Length: 205
Image 1: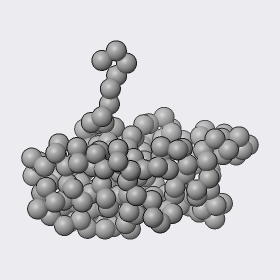
Image 2: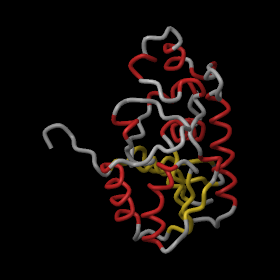
Image 3: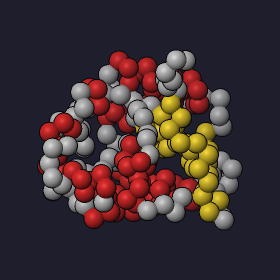
């Protein structure tokens, strides 16, 4: 089975302002996000990537396009890679949501939570992993494919493939413009890298 590069889209103003974009249309990369997309393309263009797939949301497509161009490929939109549907929470500030009583369940017991008017975390996990399996089946062993998606779907996929409880997925970090790599083998999955952030600067570095 191939090596799956799960790329989180670059920064947009919703991320910067700590607003939840969800599936709102018209959310584009900001200047930092555009720079992250270019950096990803530069970092990955030497790899023999066979295909570039993307969530159909603008911020994901705009992240995928520089990489696809550098590889001489076309971006292939895949609805299965789309963001978690947060329903009525779309566009709301994170700060106000954190004051809600239900926030503790979202963080500590997400396996039992469904967003009002949206998806359950369990549904999102099943969707993203079904999509990854479908894409993997389209490629030969040892091939590499890139899938541009969103933080929560990527984290939910990682915990499932590692055999971790879904309720632990919030402990993982997946930064804008980062790369998480999974190798799907016949004997199981291997996490090659998590949240490889090209722009990461450590304190004192």
